[in-house]
Image (tube, rainbow, N blue to C red):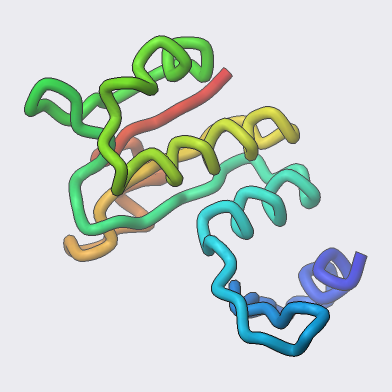
Amino acid sequence: SLLKLLLDNGYVPLVSPVAVSEELEPLNVDADRTAASIAGALKADKLILLTDVEGLILEDKVVNQLSVEDVESKLKKIGAGMITKVYAAQEALNNGVKEVIICSGIKETPISSALKHESGTVISR
């Protein structure tokens, strides 16, 4: 509700995935899973997960579009570096987000390109 209050009042909250355990030990929380959780709680239409590659790559090709059901059958083929992003995408979609886009954050205009479906992998229901 705090995030919603901030957004409703024109603020853009910055959320850090760093956390502290009950023993006050620093923890590094997965940023993609954190973003998925927040997007689901806010019932966001879209979640963009940025990475250093063009999107989900299978058999040396960027997959442009997948349904969340198709993801299940491809999990064994997805590399270790991308699997947490795919899990985050599944989590977001299961919590009400309509679409998750996994795309490169190092190319020019990554957000607008992703929103226009000009780049990356779109995973949806």
